[in-house]
Amino acid sequence: MSSITPRERMLAAINHQQTDRLPTDIWATQEVWERLYEHFGVDNKMAVYDLLQIDGIIGIAPPYIGPELNAETDAVSQPNDSALRGGSDPDFKTNKADYYVNEWGMGFCQQAYETGVYEEQIYYPLAEAETIADLEAYPWPSPDWYDYSALSGLAAGYPNRAIMCGYAAIFYYHNLLRGLEQSLMDLILKPEFTHYLVKRLTDFFNEYHRRCFEAGKGVIDITQVTDDYGSQNGLLISPSMFDAFYGGSVQSFIDLAKSYDITVFHHDDGDLRPLLPRLTQMGIDILNPIQWRCGNWDLAALKTEYGERLCFHGGVDNQQTLPFGTPDEVAREVRWLKQTLGRDGTGFVIAPCHNIQANTPLENILAMYETAVEN
Amino acid sequence: MLDEIYDCIIDGNAPRTAEMVQGALENGHDPGQILNESMVAAMAEVGRLFEIGEYFVPEMLVSARAMKAGLAVLRPHLAQAEIEPIGSVILGTVQGDLHDIGKNLVGMMLEGAGFKVLDLGTNVPPAQFVTAVQEHQPQFVGISTLLTTTMTGAKKIVEALDVANLREQVTVMVGGAPVTQDFVDAIGADLFAPDAALAAKQARAHLLGI
Image (tube, rainbow over all chains, first blue to last red; front, side, top):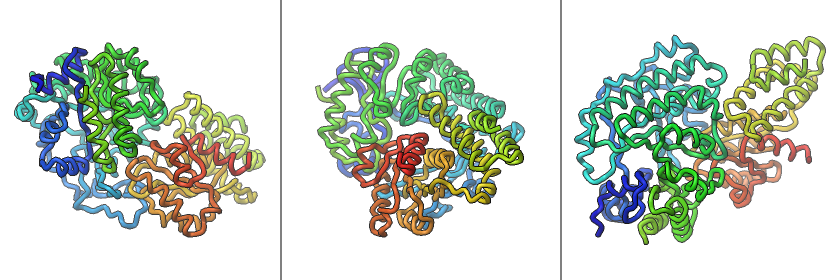
């Protein structure tokens, strides 16, 4: 039995050092966790981590202690787009018991599907905003609304695991405040409005994260500076749009993390490759989720070009292999990933390339983790 | 004038597109000519710019919005001149799935290609696709599916159309992130649309037999 802790193994891979094996991680929907608990006869995630030898990165966040959130209030009780009110299914109801609003005023519902339930956003609080005055009038959340003093206690619950705190997602929050379609058009139709919105978000994120990093000194290993610029084929927005609207903010988030010696984890779904040169130069350390199927990435080439600078996290395909493949196909893919992204024995964390979905056969999940730790 | 309308759509200038269309009509231009030579042609160019990686989703959305503004001015004149759309399409996202930006883009590009589009929205049960086909008699049914957990819904729609004896009278197109040609073949659908620009191009080609 190895005396290396999961945290040491994770940090070794991130820092491109040799260790006993490549570390592993897990992202999964609640339905998958319930099946894993049942399979192993346990009732908590850490027990599953131990049984599957998952090293993991544990996310902690300062608890919300701001104004009470009430989905009954007029302003946020009704989704503001009929297409978003759960769509055309007559069985869908905006059930008040299921509908909730977060501190940003974003409204979520439970969308059931055959094998599970998703939390789907159906209300976008700035969808109707037209002017900068409208943005100024919006009740922006305050960094005072979170209890940062809880962070060290939360981290203490996971003494041997790598700890992640923070989520600076500027493009994503623009999408979530305005609606995706509207936010994409904002870049062309409302540039000054967008710059103001981005500035307010940036100011909030920088102060919130500064307080997290201060309170979590010595316990936070990693933070997310994250967004979804990629799509199934190529980028959603052009690199020059990224530069014009979001690049400066992203750099400030990275710089803040670095000033506290915290590793920057960049999650970016889809084919973000055209942005990778500038993101690497800006200082990201970990690249997740490596959705290689979006554009059929050459992983050997990716390792050659970026392997010294970046640690890759993810890789096991969640669109076809995990849900629809055989355990053998899963095992072969994990071996291929180890040989490409992990060919130097470091700089790679084996994980699914997003949350394992409810329709994934249990034997595929087991095959992934068994193959990940084999010699 | 037709060139100006074309340029306004490429530039994504909605108010000016509407103005120029109004101007062109007042100058006696044929509504069908305005539609085909400036608007449909402009959207085909937008599609091409997207395919070669010069236009991204924001540019497509904004150009489509400009085209819609022009079409709103043009529509009554098209009806008056008895100019019909080249075909009609029913669109929807499968049951259990609330995502729609891809479907919306497809709808815009299809309108830009001269189709009439009826968008059923998201989370659409198979029965509702069937009812819509019975009522509107479209040439195409477009199915959007983003999630691996609900993509089997696409097959259910094809089966429901079959059971209702409507399968033969429509061409079924399927698109969405996890969708592949293999998937489309496996579920008995007709066309695979990897993106909105290609969806419109393929639908138009399929209809016109080119």
